[in-house]
Image: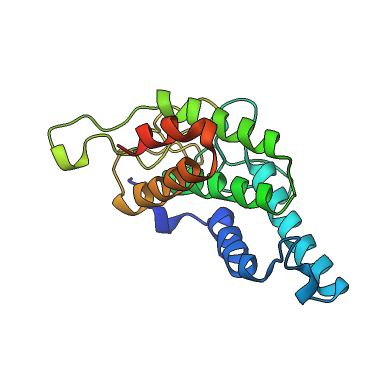
Length: 191
């Protein structure tokens, strides 16, 4: 049985949608004067809570890869995708820019994720236009491409998703532009 991205419930994607919807409204420190104090505090609280969900889903000091979702009991799923990884990278940038995490922590988290991405298996097959793409499912604990679905033990036929790889590429371009110390590493992963 081949699992497809749209068949799996994704807390991470829902969280991303909420974060993207809220971010234009979250004031930077310079813009806070446009909101009354209570509004600004509430928006910052939403952003901080959203960041905490990403932090909970991520093996920040191991592989630096986020899980696809986390259970109500705080158990991370044993699978991730390029979209999840990209979402985590740009959420780390947003958390840094909003002052939720310190810049040094953001750089350390991003660097750890890039280190793992650099060693992950990518497509090297005959289709030149697909070469270098990441597969769609990996184990966030060890960064290995999944061939068995961890939830039910069914076989996973590794596949490529141009949409998922596009989300990851967008995040890597953001990192390249926003984190000078990681610019060359992020850019090399896009190429």
